[in-house]
Length: 234
Image (cartoon, rainbow, N blue to C red; front, side):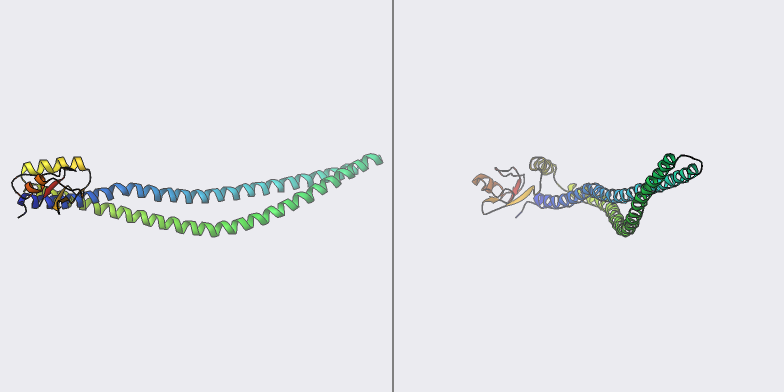
């Protein structure tokens, strides 16, 4: 017959394991939230980068337009000067200046048109991508909401689990309880109280000595595996 104190310790162990699982899940929630928030930040940065690129192209297009207007003003100035000069070589020099400015205008306008088309294409692409990114961000925020709800539920569960552990611990003899706590520190991971089956410890699965196997049959005091130090019973 199993030691009544061991039976109670097995309940303590089950409730301890349940509590540990809740605690572990609670510990992971901030990590999961951080991962999601990093994804959101990355998505937002993609939008900002695309907007910055568009603004830079718009600025460049505006600069080209300013340069065109500057050349047009220069042409007007050169034409007015042609009306005032008397010498042919001066007239021809101004004509060359006009032709040069007109050629520069042509080049600048080609660049401006090309840039305008590129901006229009980038805007259409950006609007499509932004809509997709915003949907992804919305979905990530939904996941954060789920995590926050889960965190609240776990915090409520952990209180109930702690109370459940505390209530059963009160029913266990102090010598068994202190031995159980010592085994928890030594083994780090459940199970801490295990059965001996076929002369083997169900914790480390190694063969126990004949003396341990014999003593485990008797109630009244804790017994331990001589391989892993877990509490054992038979």
